[in-house]
Image (cartoon, helix red, strand yellow):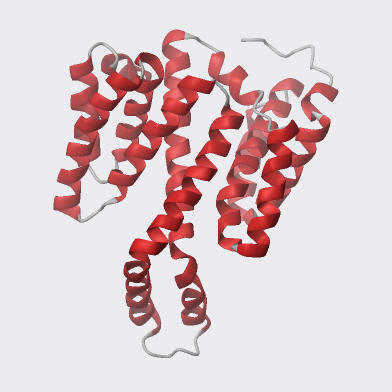
Length: 284
């Protein structure tokens, strides 16, 4: 992977061709988004936008071949988040900005595309449950229809943030070894930013519960970063990270809310600062 990033950064043409090629392949467009973000982070919005145009051409080709429109959404969102990161150099602010961007796009999508989302869900209902509206699966999907835009945008925003994480990892690997590890382990949402986020989550709960998914994403990422930071500081080893991610997949209904709670607690108490550093910890 690092070799791919190194080759892309040798020239704008290399980055553009790779971004277009990966975007044209339905299952690899995330790599294209990460390359666009890498160029944006390292060389600025002007060159990043040029590579983004290449990638969007590839995304249009993919759309014509496969009907997948996802790259055309993930690519520009990732590029925009990379511009924010280059400007503020803070994961906390980037994550909050991503949540607000997701809400804006969700509202626009709900206004303009809600009928299409509802039609797709209806097709799934008919394909799986037929016309039996009494089935739990049918009723569950029916309840999703009013909030489909928020659910789709939450998934796409998670993907865009993961692409940005990969780009930041590449950037550190090429130009600042060890920097990504230190930066991610220090991720913490605190102070006024945390207070504003908690208030907005409360308002979303009262007015539009589906928007909570987007507003809780920054805290979820901060919770994951806290786990990484604590494991690294106490030198517990990679097996604990593996156990954490396996547990997150198997017990997500318990683990995800817990991560959000500990992220809020960390924002108030600074948990990592209260943990003694293991003498075996190897600084990078």
